[in-house]
Amino acid sequence: MTERFTEGRAAFRRRLSSGEPLLVPWCPDALTARLCERLGFDGGYLGGGGLGFSLAISEALLTCTDLATAAWQIRRRSDLPLIVDGGVGFGDAIHVARTVWELENAGAHAIEFEDQVSPKRASHHRNIEHLVPVEEMIGKIKAATEARRDPDLLVIARTGAVQNENFAAAIDRLNRYAEAGADVVMVLADDDDQLAAAPARVDAPIATLTSFDLHTPDEWRQLGYHLVIDPVTGQTAAFTALRTAYEHQRAGRPSGCVPIEAFTTFHGFQELAGFEDLYDIERATTEPGT
Image 1 (cartoon, rainbow, N blue to C red):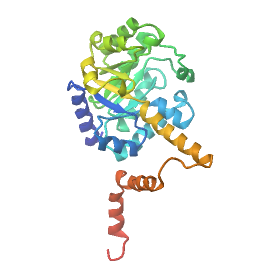
Image 2: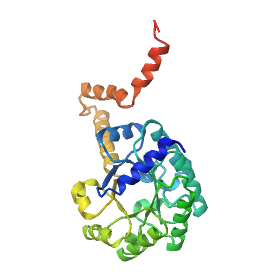
Image 3: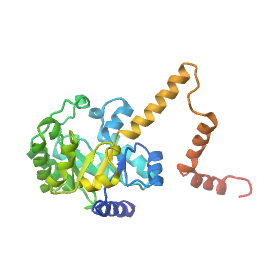
Image 4: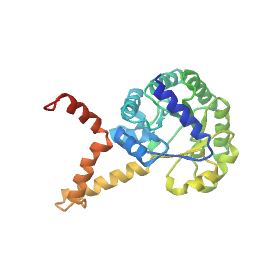
């Protein structure tokens, strides 16, 4: 473990306990992570769903190596706290342990695991899911917490029981997951009433996965959420803009992007990506007179 990782994880854990909700958006790569840092977001979310769409293979066919590689590419160029979606852990408890080894080593600040069956099924994208028994998920949580070397690495336990059993069953699962050692539990509510009721019925820091736009930061705090992850807005906004521009260009029309503004943004990537550090090396070693 590097000191950089351990200090960052400890700080992120402290912030989670501050009483203010942490807002964490979609973060698929290092450039986006550096943008999130600049804008002051609390962290970034490397989601399995988003990565599965980007690779056009579904989350179900991702490998642990896919996730660890993506996480390391982000961490290599950014100190933004990173929450990585570990899915179902790529198998039973022993595979969960291996997942923790890989993602912790890649620099994750938190790893999320969910209680769907393994291997994960592509049809979960069309809301056909199957949950594992509670005891099986508890075994995975214990394996995850025991596998981490850094005690400040957060283990997040997510349930799909609201959609596949009922709200009461989801609350029961989350409380049992917290008792098993999960640092944070995550609920996916079906409506505003469930979203409002869940924090008071769970004895642990609680997270949800939805659009930030449902509530203001103050409202999220009043509801009692410690962590709100938005895996949808960034990816869909980016793709919508891309599709519109390409459709226009393919039809022989202007893209809607002003060329001078597009090139300004493109050249601005150099500064956001931190290329000045690279240019300094070249100036010192390859330019005339050095």
